[in-house]
Image (cartoon, rainbow, N blue to C red):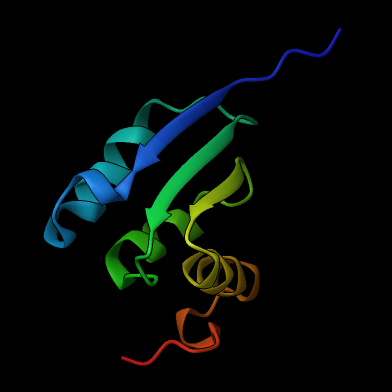
Length: 91
């Protein structure tokens, strides 16, 4: 039997200065080997939230949802481990 679960983290629902706290709160309660649905809307990867997510990539399956360009940027950054690797993103 396969049992899976998902937890949601909506970054579009909070101000940018609260992204790290939102991610931290979700990660603190997310069991290992579940899917994290990260809702980014049109937001480019932000350093505080990105760094925290990178610490949990081994234990979670991260599903990025949002606008095509933002999803591409987040996926590229998380896959490479480098926020600057996201094409089209500039600090």
